[in-house]
Amino acid sequence: MQPQINLLIAEDEPFQQELLLMNLKPFDFVHVVDMVKNGDELIHKATTIPNINALLLDLNLGKGRGGLESYAALRLRGKELPAVLVTGVIPEASYTYDLGVIDIVEKPFTPFRFKQAVERLSKHIDYQNFVQHGGLYIPVFSQDIEQLVPSEVLFIESLNRTIYVHTRTAVLETKIPLRVYCKYLESHYFYLTHRSFLVNMKQVHSIEGNVIHFANEKRTALIAEDIVQEIVNYWHDVIKR
Image (cartoon, rainbow, N blue to C red; front, side, top):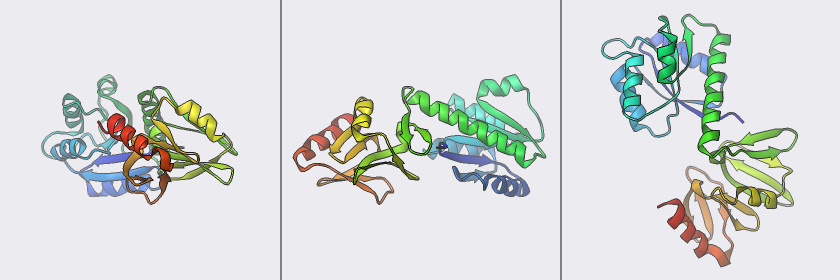
């Protein structure tokens, strides 16, 4: 499964903005969070919108700070985001690499070249997620084998002797038994809240009675009646503190 890319685009030319959006349409794992036209807007949006995890930058952004200057300012403020430069002026490669630029796409570009850059960005984010979660992947085995990072998984459910892995974007059937997942994930904030639910406690938004809710999700998980207080205490003391 491709990692979700929440993208902030910095481009001041309307035609180029439309061109970028058009070339991003085939990638269902890319969500354009916002579009900015200058360096000040770029810094403001990148530091105040929490879910942005990647940038698409033009080098020249009209008046004021350009794309690279603004990008460097972000890093000085402790905000490190992978970026792809889409520009008509190619800067020195060693400098951009030191800043964290993943790829440089020269204008005018072909759809194939743009696709290469998006795939490179996706692989970089996937690797970042892997490292941030202690080098852990959650395997899903059905017709094919998929590898998920823990943050992608809401909960794992046993229903009518079939195991389902619930992510934000999909429900995946797997042949791996629930007890195997329990053992594998016991040290990674996954909790067997019910005989049928293994929950990623870091994804829990609220608990009402014996029902677990996830942010912006209609799907819920259950808690066995005899361990409700135990789960609530764990969520408050270990996860929310």
